[in-house]
Length: 68
Image (cartoon, rainbow, N blue to C red):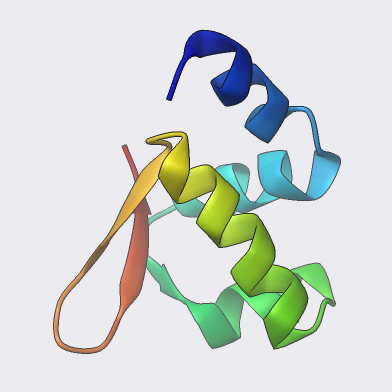
């Protein structure tokens, strides 16, 4: 993914909030969705775009998200 796609991924306020939440440590999808007040499908969409931009990764058997 190029730099313009990375900036596009970061242009959305909810995606920036996801990264801010992840700065505090790893979180699972349920924790992120609850903190943001959004549905699981909406969170999944945002996480997919952020992951494609290389902004975070998932770890472990249970999926946790951590900022890079």
